[in-house]
Length: 161
Length: 161
DNA sequence: ATGAATATGGGATATCATGGGATTTTATGG
DNA sequence: CCATAAAATCCCATGATATCCCATATTCAT
Image (cartoon, rainbow over all chains, first blue to last red; front, side):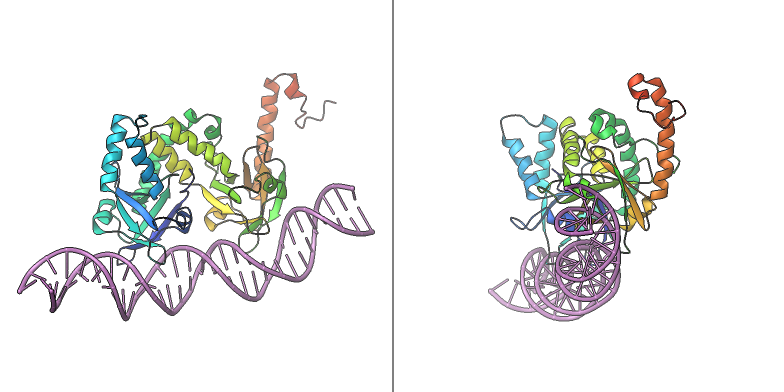
């Protein structure tokens, strides 16, 4: 599930267009819908995006009888599927962010794309910087629960340097 | 889990390219993504690298140990997956280090690759020398607290035959 | 020593992000 | 059903950067 990795900041032009990072596009592949699925995050002032397979996965889990989702997650998934918008790539690999989305995320002249594995987020760059600091503190606490692989990453404090 | 062993120093050319040591490349194998996943060390002024399986394990742990939409899941993904970058091999087995990475590690004309088993580090060569000395001193002290097996490793105390 | 694998250098080429004019589509009012 | 403005999309151009491709040097194992 390593579709979306890394963080990039791209410009948003006067028409509301942004380039989706090439590495993200590469993992969407040449088949199927050429674009992303986006929705306004419930938790944060940011946009969340994914490819169609992520949405299909959500849909399958909701409709399966095997209870992959808790009641809360099922509610979330249902609302997401209802609110999600398809945004196609233009020939240059850009998407168009409607005003509603720009306003929700306070995005004006630039946007930061953050890869989260199976999905990604789109932030106002300074807002992302603040958000990251908070996430890092949470991650430091949680990393220990992931066993040796993540402990290995040494999320603790820097040494003299 | 001994994919990456030994220490090698290679040149970094004016374009920011470095050869990944052949022994490291050999352990990445011909299947899957031809390159490495790198991130700026959270602890040291160096770059850390691994193959995709390392990151996939991490990603799976993150997604399976926490709920699909949980705060913990998101924080870890933001910090660990958001900060990781894919770096593909060119036909000669080199990777391209972006400026952001070169600056973090103070790398200019050469880079030292240090194997650490399932991952490796990339250092500015003099910085690595200093780092190594410090690690060695810590290791000597720690070895004394361990049993005879570790003491037999003779970590540089040559005054006692 | 000798050949093979590895590392390095640099010119040519391709890709990416970006900007802007032109054209098409969509929504709205007549 | 058409006219019109607004919005979205296409198409092309540009610089910066990354990648390819081939030539050469270096290292390593036998």
